[in-house]
Image (cartoon, rainbow, N blue to C red; front, side):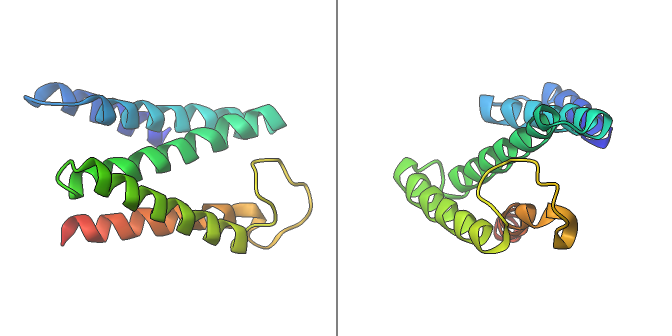
Length: 135
């Protein structure tokens, strides 16, 4: 529910600004999709609902990361591309080292942290980009 509320508030805030771009709108829509996917997964707990939960989360992380890199590089496309490739490789490396599988399948085996370690790269990315953005 929090993701839907935040998406609605962000969309309204976007409407009061003089300038907005498609990236901002896409990230807000993805935040709303996370809320919907999470509701579906926690309501139905099926494989398709898990995909509806996980895919928007990773799309949000990728889009947000790319948006931050692009803005921090003063809209320099080559710098953004190089930084995005490095960030992707690092996230995949962390994911591979901390996850039981590469992919988004539902695993019913008992796991440490109940399979939530797949989100460690996302947390690392968001924390890193938040710190860099405030420097």
